[in-house]
Length: 162
Length: 230
Image (cartoon, rainbow over all chains, first blue to last red):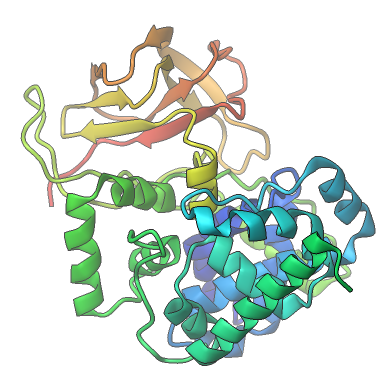
């Protein structure tokens, strides 16, 4: 296959970091399988990947969204996460985040995927609005709006207000 | 993704791991690279994050090819051929000579199958679960010094195992048997030739020559290779 050498180099260059990004979702036991599946998707979208100014960022976003969707789609996993608590939603460096984090641990699987994605970048990876906007490909204002929607959803959920 | 410069730093004022991944991948421009290198030189937290980015990763064992799905079969093939070439980085930081060893600036060396998962995978994890064990390595042409950041059990082993073998590597020789070490107490080893693995665990690891190398989740380890001057 003509694409093999490129993909082999890509895999050698990025498999390790993809594995680390996957493990931040608590997918330790399944991480190898998830990495495989992510690279299947990379192969399917290879032309798009090659066109990226920052392939690492493209891969980072693909990995994050794949993991989010995998966890959301797997009802058994969601149940386990509710039972065990979610290792992903832990952030202690900003006390102002604690209430939102506590709510996210219970509620994340009910949120819109675009809000979960931004939440991961903001609370797990501690990225700034500027950097999240670069990763997602939208404006800082949009990111600010999504984070505000997230906080409101968490506040509503914890206070039991419909 | 847009083409805006973005922000190299996280909300806690340190370099984001994504920035460090991009730095490692060679995707940052000259100004950004200088910013990262300059900050890392002066920041121990970011040195630790960069070490996490560059540290050896879990060896991905080849899966049996599915066959019916060309994409999965391709990935299986790639794993089988790439397992022996996943880069393991040894990060050194500029500093004074240590016990006769010459400390050098950061280098990468392509090496054998990488082995360990890092101590943390995200900034949130870094803060919420303080690293239970951590290990720094200062290496030169003739050996290395391993310094644990926390009390623990330290061991140094040499690994073997056939290329393409889909099982965990085997301990070829136990150079330093597991022993209790205090935080900040360096252990030096004069060494040339084959790479070795320095292991630091919260509890005594079970390591014996001839056994498979399967460290527990409470361990971190670093592959140490002989460093060649630039």
